[in-house]
Image 1 (spheres, helix red, strand yellow):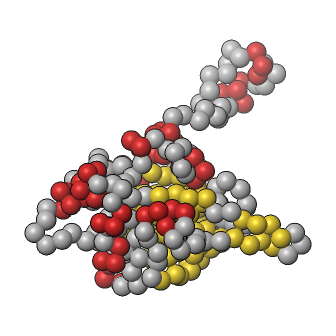
Image 2 (cartoon, helix red, strand yellow):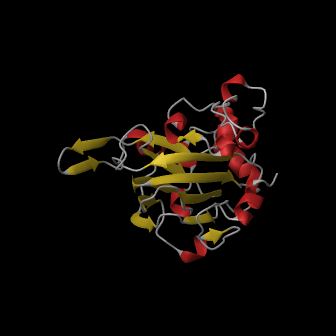
Length: 246
């Protein structure tokens, strides 16, 4: 609540109205604060825009250009095999799928089990993959664990990511992505590694439509769910409890 009793610009209002005023804070804040509070936009996370210390290893963002076809609609590419970020990291999906989330609903948290070679300690394996040899993309076992490439076609999404891999810092990212029906810099695809918990909330008045590719074919036993609650218009309380762990 704002202290407006002595503010001359509000002197024309009665005391009840002045005491009830709440002033909105329009300060952007630093990127870490924005990522934790859900104020970050996808356009701020692409390329070199995101400081390395705030990124989750293996998570990638890349722009998707949407071509407007006036009086008809729009056209947009998902990704080209061997090009862009998927080409750089050597990831190409074995399966593409679609999903629709009705306005005001949410999905997740989901997590896919990361592969760890026999006889190797998980923390040591992830340290090798993402700390010691982060550019050795050929070392990543895409065929043995599910990585996602998520693209959004319609609506607005709030996405939550949490790194839950053994021995890795528990980094969190929370940001907004816009679908192709809202062409602009927030038309971004997201690459999500196995072991990174992810959740999505539809925050627009229209249904959220997405297309996603996976490095392995769908297997129900690999669909782990954490603190899952009935879909609700707001983030469920157990999401918030899980989000605030650690």
